[in-house]
Image (tube, rainbow, N blue to C red; front, side, top):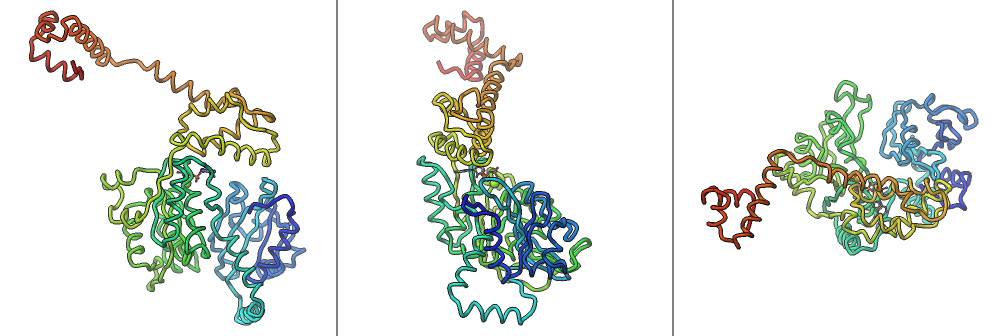
Length: 466
Ligand SMILES: Nc1ncnc2c1ncn2[C@@H]1O[C@H](COP(=O)(O)OP(=O)(O)OP(=O)(O)O)[C@@H](O)[C@H]1O
Ligand SMILES: [Mg+2]
């Protein structure tokens, strides 16, 4: 949740509580996890406390394992969680509140579409049906909180390579077909996934993310498909919806899909073919209408060849594909990207960097960027911290200078094996002899005292084309 300077935290809380108290509730915690605000409904219903009583308490004491620490640690939203409160299952999300570039607090939005009883539902329905404008306003707010964070405008770059990738992705976004986003690490695949959802017919629905590499094999299926109460030991008493269920009418983003275990791949294929999902331990199926966006930085076609990824699943998820180009293929984007990162970092860290010096830019253009835009971003941040103000100079780019030095040192100092050294000498001797004889191979054989058959074999092995 990025806010501009004019909005302060109190205004924001007022705005949010007005909207969300109607749907469920919200709570805000500070950076240490202490409650600084709850909507009236939230504290009464969840904690049985008035707002003033809940204020200042540690959220961990009132609601253990709610996930607040994660959002404050990494500054990223944590959506689609299920909290069990008062024997009820509620959909919850933690969203970071970033003001003036700094993470200041986190807000929990809970049970927006859950009503506690039918009277409440009717009362709300009456209220909003009489006021169309208010309904649209709520819808917009809900979308803003649950939807994708980035649009195509967030993907910076003017190079032909990135502009074409964006245009292609934009065309694809308009369809409902599965998309596979490929590209090296740090190229911006996640940004593309968000942007595709934002511009798709599913944009009004939720954008649900599952990082297939981030969860142990044993949990991946319950994350994807959910489970019924008592499906296995350790399962929550109330069961849990899977990411597919949560993504209904929206998009599901399967990040690092190459990491899915083979047996889960088979189950995923079935869900995609039948467009319905059954919770683990459940007996009924639920129709699912979710757009599938996947991403990988692996060569998934090679994995298919090696039998590590199912071919049939590959074709299902890869109806369309978008390849995000590596940064070294679009070095001309470095100035615009750097400018944006510098601006952001100045706000976040209070530095006063005005830009890159010519020499610094020159150095950056010579580097290979194996970590792509992510590496560029962190290089800029380090350089900003190092320089503090004015222009970034080559000496502030110590990180890439070190890496470039190591690379050339590795290149020069590698010791040849005995075999390589012998082959090099042999090669050189044969070429020199052939030069002496003007290309006459018979004479060269005599000079080298070697028979013709072995001579031709040596030419082939040493790749001498004379
Ligand atoms: N074109 C771009 N414009 C602005 N920021 C970008 C761009 N591309 C990438 N970034 C930034 O670079 C970082 C890495 O991007 P992202 O996480 O989308 O990469 P990825 O391809 O998903 O990497 P990985 O394969 O390692 O998961 C993020 O901070 C993202 O905001
Ligand atoms: Mg990623």
